[in-house]
Image 1 (tube, rainbow, N blue to C red):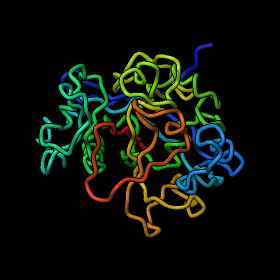
Image 2 (cartoon, rainbow, N blue to C red):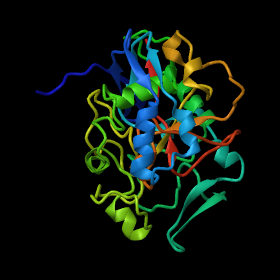
Image 3 (tube, rainbow, N blue to C red):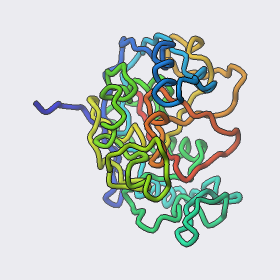
Image 4 (cartoon, helix red, strand yellow):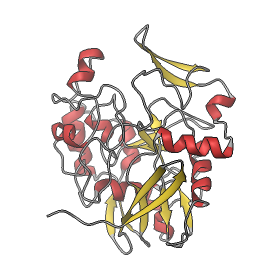
Length: 311
């Protein structure tokens, strides 16, 4: 039986739309992060039994969300970001400084920072309007959200449009699952749901942890090419990393209000990316995996974002 979802659609002009799907989260409790028992299982399956220190970032906690929200059905694509750039005459952080990161098809190597790599060019000649935008900083993504808020048609009164908090992101990613992925624990099944390091990737860039199946894409895929999760959301595992809005810290310190979005610093100013990307194995694309990156206007050729709207 086909599931019915409630959507929020923004008209960005010139025939471009951005679609969000409602997440009924008010009063829902879930476990964010990874329990100690599951951390040991992940260490056994992916790290030869040696638990990596970064898994300390995933120590689990129980979170009760305080309100419903809409989340981008897809990652923001280049056509949508282009509308923002055109209308606001916006210049990204990468363009204002030393550039971004990309793939050199002549040398077959990843490189950057370099002025030639921007949100419009990651070096992959097959990338088009429907591919997720990358080489954007968290600041760039926040500016896009501010612009999008002004595009609301008033049919649904919105408090704010912003990047997801980590709790909001992970709840939407899990879609009711307590496993490593939105469907359970089997990494090979990701070929149906996600663009990650697969057999095609392994042929060009050997990675022993790549899945055996083929997802059809070596680099980023156009958004929405794989199965959605049970909340009707696509590409939350793999494809490109996604910026989160709140301060990084221990989950035990998450606030009890505002959907547990951490608006107060615990002494760490670096931002967090979620979801993994096209060149990474299953362990990096788990629902609970957190990637803490450098401070400042960081941007990456494999990192983009999706938005949420809070009614």
